[in-house]
Length: 405
View 1 (cartoon, rainbow, N blue to C red):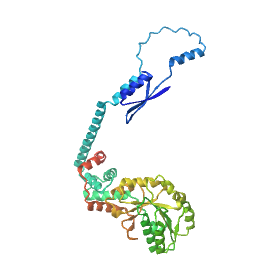
View 2: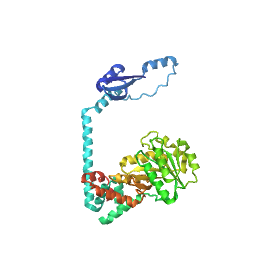
View 3: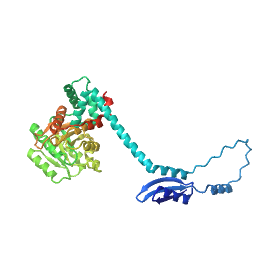
View 4: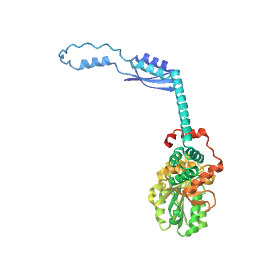
């Protein structure tokens, strides 16, 4: 098979060059646009007649077959020429009229979908004003559209607005998983992981101080595993001296399982790790020591509530390689909205251990409580004066209105 590549300013000239070099029976293998025009790859089989003649010369003649009954000849068909078919298809696909028609169809489809969503939302507002008001309020809180529709669908249609609000808040709280203050009571080997700047070191300091205030420093140990941030070890050593708790500096991540085994008598071991970007290609390798430690270490993912919902979801997905068993929600006081963070936590089903909303140690750290989180999200939306207009509601819930009937 002979394969050639032809470049030309447009498809017509490229196909003309293919026809001139390979003939009308050439087959177009591929075509693509380039900076100078188009590029076409074509192929042509070897000469079939010469191959047949060569085969006849080598192979001995076969005996003459028995004459078959005469059949009525079929009407002659015009052979299909791949080259001509390719010319027609290529020209049709690149025709300005076809491209303009495709653009108009996309525009018409968008207009039609918008009109249908508006009609569906108007119909829902007429039939179920309580449901539409709840969808509006949950949108102002920042909750994801599908979760808001799911929660509103669980509210009885006969409920009054005040009752519907209470049921919606309870529905969100039921979808959030919290662990309670078990670290303070039971201890454990807890490694705080998360992106840079999420508040891991501050959270560790708050947890350590809370433990010492309740149990004393005897059963507490701190591990400095952050080998990247300048001054990270000295900060943790200063904290250990202040609390009277030993601080162990991890020189190499592979030493962590052995160090954990040596600290088996300590009821509470807190591990400070280096911040890692969720998009770091070496994230799994950087946190490989935690995976090697297995069930001996509980991994807690530290998430900043001030981060956008999409970035939070990406962080949870990327750090899933170290199997976090819970999370700590930090910087709640800096968040413009908590709806995105709550939506991510409901979808991921990641339990929440603690909530941090300030820099004071240890006052600004409290055990996570679902109803308090939802109430904070509602109050934050009211204080910010969040408002959802009709166009936004139509786009968000027009396609979901049928599910709320």
